[in-house]
Amino acid sequence: MPKAVGIDLGTTNSVIAVMEGGKPDVIVNAEGARTTPSVVAYKGEERLVGQIAKRQAALNPKATLFEVKRFIGRRWDEIREEAGRIPFVVKEGQGGGVRIEANGQDLAPEQVSAEVLRKLVNDASAKIGETIRDVVITVPAYFDNSQREATRQAGEIAGLNVLRVINEPTAAALAYGLDKKGNETVLVFDLGGGTFDVTILELGEGVFEVKSTSGDTHLGGADFDQRIVSWLADEFKKDHNFDLRKDPQALQRLIEAAERAKIELSQASETTISLPFITFDPETRTPLHLERTLSRAKFEELIGDLLRRVREPVQRALSDAKLSPAQIDEVILVGGSTRVPAVKRIVKDIVGKEPNESVNPDEAVALGAAVQAGIISGDASLGDIVLVDVTPLTLGVEVKGGMIAPLITRNTTVPAKKTEVFTTAENNQPGVEINVLQGERPLAADNKSLGRFKLEGIPPMRAGTPQIEVTFDIDANGILHVTAKEKSSGKEASIRIENTTTLDKTEVERMVREAEQNASADKARREKIEKRNALDSLRVQALQQIDESAADQALKDRVKALADEAEEATKGDDDARVADVQKRLEDALRELMTASQAQGDAQGQPKQDDDVIDADFKPAD
Ligand code: ADP
Ligand code: MG
Image (cartoon, rainbow, N blue to C red; front, top):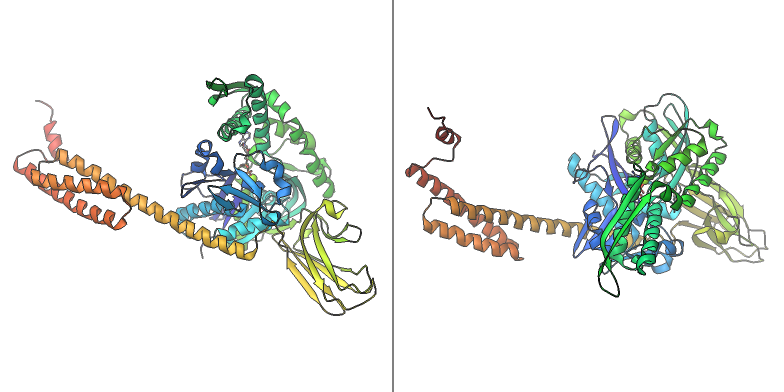
């Protein structure tokens, strides 16, 4: 059976890992790197994914898509503000969802994420020599229902079988605790590029039990970068009365420079940001340069309020787990942004403990996902591992007066099932509309509506008489299914929660088809290019042989003519012609080499042979 893999589909970087000889291990990508930037660029007919896409971002700012995870499974009104701060176009889609515009195409965030998944899996398949189909994908623990569902759909669009969607901090804990023997209470602190997650778990004897989880899906290293960008742009505006944020190319360069500066400040106490020719003076048309020094202290000041925002989720997780900071045995740091010294400091300050840095913050999540993939696909080397996870947010229905009636409260162990009985508010009410909500606020309107459905055909009865059973069922992926049943008539209605932000089935099917077509088009394009490259190097080789060969001129002329023909063929679109010229040129070249060798032998010229060369360079006696 082909192997199941674990994928950390990160906001910034993604990682893929597999169980190998009883241990999870990262699979390097085609470029030989252990992490792959979650960046997709559209350029002409081509799609670039990973480092190659990231590298050309400044030249192609409107069609280089990054941090798309911020938009997956979201409603437009949730991300409107963020959408305004990036160089590519994010807009409202049908039904209040989010769409991304790139290269004249309208893309769902799921489709863009699918490209990242496809690259990871294709590269990994090539590396391990097996076609991978089964995957476990991680999501931030604090992802709500639509974000989870959308992530699963991204996997589907990439042609994968998503065995399970698991929480990133839980995965990290699996990687950390795999070889631990005793009992421990750990707090996983995961601060990546776009999201912050904190999870408290109890580990012991193969049982990983999540006690509580909390976080902020709008907080990460990219926000740090953004602060540096704003500072740089404000300073620049003061000096030159020009707003760099209005120029997508300049903005993209600013973002990249800001991230570099931030990373340097994790080591150095000061760094210089230098962006020559960032723009032109609007009046004099002379080039303008940007040069600034940023100290670590200034950086910490710029991100001060962002840093303080990690405190509340940590405290909420502690109180939900009914634990005091002193009861935490280890604090595990995950995510690239935990390398920022001020982040480490604040963690230490909140929990009162030096963080444990034994896991690789970039890889732990993917490694844990690989462990989970191993568990699900029955990898015998793993023994009995039990994973008990929780749902991050309260789920309920809207009731009279616009209030929420919770059915499953946050931090309930999943899978979970709960039924409650509701009734009508009016006499002879023929139906009820059930508005499914997720969130912690008492008023329905302040929470996220995951979807609405109607239960109709209730027989005429006085208000308060019908018994309507509403059942919430959360599966192991943390995805909710809801049913409602009127008891006297047996009328039933159910939905798998699909609201406007998740794609409907036909859309997913269309995207799967498109992605497959794209993939085969990509492959065909690659093959086309490779064939032309092969013919071109044969042409170069032929020209060299003509120069060096001692064969007769007629043959040389023939090869030269074929080389010219090859040059022409590589420029054209005719594949059959490329193949034909390739073959004829190969034959002619072989003839040339044979003839040349025969000529050389006849004329007593040294053969291109080691022995002869040795003889020529014999030391003088
Ligand atoms: P995600 O889970 O969002 O994909 P990662 O865990 O890969 O993210 O973290 C990416 C973030 O970490 C980026 O914002 C990146 O700039 C930041 N980062 C990586 N290395 C460092 C470092 N040495 N110092 C500060 N920030 C870093
Ligand atoms: Mg991450």
